[in-house]
Amino acid sequence: MAFYGDGSNLTGVGATYGAYTAFGTSGYVDLTGIASDTRKTTILVYKWSSSSSFNFYMKLGDSGGIESSGYEGTSWYQNGGSSGSYNNYTQEFRLPIGSSTHTMSGRIVIGRAHDTSHVYVCEGYFGDSGSTLMAGFGGAKQLSGTLDRVRLGFTSGNADTGAYRVIQES
Image 1 (cartoon, rainbow, N blue to C red):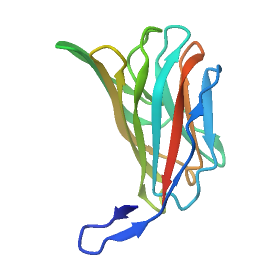
Image 2 (image 1 turned 45 degrees about the horizontal axis):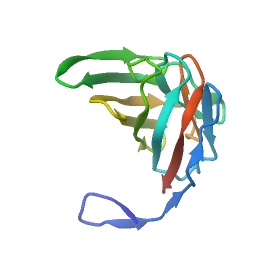
Image 3 (image 1 turned 135 degrees about the vertical axis):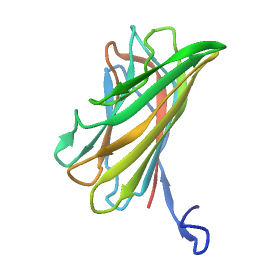
Image 4 (image 1 turned 60 degrees about the horizontal axis):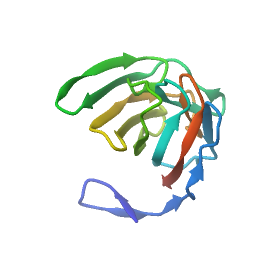
């Protein structure tokens, strides 16, 4: 059970949990069927890696399809004690790392910030299995309609391992 509100009048809401699903071997996967009353979508990612050098990305979409512009996002990574990198992307939310040696696990949260203007805020945090690499992204995207699909993919190469689970909360 999840709760929304300012604490003075909490309302319980139900959550729908999908099964862990393998990514397959394509360069991206489209997660469709997000219910129109969903206020928060959480995507759990487990040991996702690519067959070649890559940058992991996420795009949002509505009934008109996946959108490839208008993202207001910043991404970062930190590798152990060394300084990392910060980047801005307008075509997608993206992790600024790229190597087939990374196996990433983490969480993405997409929240509907405004009901009528279709503004969604997003954050994603990932760690690399077996190393000190951490990476993340955050920002906002205004869609022309209600979110009903999410694309997770790589800028190059195909997935070679990994699974995901989608949790929807209304």
